[in-house]
Length: 352
Image (cartoon, rainbow, N blue to C red; front, side, top):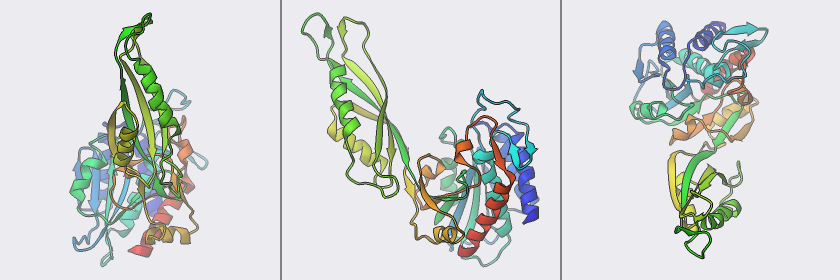
C-alpha cells in the first residue's frame, strides 16, 4: 500500500505539471498509459485522449465494474497566486491545477485497479477508464468510450467527495424558449407583444412544482437565467427568447421534464441537450453498504459529472473536497490520497 501511495503522489505531480485543458489531454493520457504499463498492465486501450484497461483475468461471462475519473482540467482562473502547473508540497498540501478535481481520484482509482489487476477468480471484472472532456461535457470523453467497454454492472466515478458516498446526482438540461408574437407600432394598438406572452410562461416556470419529489433532492428546480427581446423602443416585439436552467432529480428523466414544459407553456421549447441525465444507486447496493460499514455517509450531489452519461447504477466518490474545485491555488491533502486508495481497495474487496 505504501508503494501504491508513493507512486500515486508521483503520478499526480506529473499530471499537474502537464497542462490538460479539455480537448487537449494528450500529455496526461501518455502519462497514464506509461503508469499502467509500468505496473505490468498489458490490456491498455486508447481512444482520443481516453485511456482504459481491463483486469488480467477478464472474463466476458462475469459482470464488470467500471472505475472512472477524468484527467482534463478547467483553465486556471485569474486568482492564482502560484504557478498552477508547478506541483508543490507544503506540509500536508499538494498544490496544483487539477490536484483536487479530479487528479487525486484518478491516481487513487488507478492504484486500486493495479492492486487487483493480477488477482484470479474474482466475482467481477474490473475496467479502469481515465477520460477527457469532462469539464466541457465533450463528446470525445467518456461518452465515446462506453460503446467499447461492453456490458457494465455498476460504476464508481471518482470526483472529490471527501470519500463520502454520493448515491444520487442531479441531471441537467438547458432549454431555449421562444415566445412568438406579431410586430406592430408601439404608439398604436397593433401587434401581439411577445414579451407579454413570455411573462406568462416564465411565471408558470417560476411557480410550477413537479408532483414527484425525490427523497434525496426534493423537487425539480427550474430557473429562467437569460432573456432578450426587441429591436427598438417603438416596435412591439414579435419574438422574445429566454433560457431555462433545469436541475432534474432521480424521479424524472430529462425528456419527461421537457415534455411537461411543452404541455404547459405556449412558447417554443428547444432543449440544447438531454444527455446529462440524473443518476443514482440503490442505498442497499453492496458497494454502498460496504462504504457505510467503513463509516462513510450517503448524500445527493448537486453538481454534475460524467456520472450523468451512465445508464447503470453509479456511485460518485473520491478524495478531495468539491469546494476546492475550480478554485485558485487548488490543492489536495496527501492524507486524502492515501485514504482514497485504502477505502477504494477495502470497498472493492467486499464485492470482488
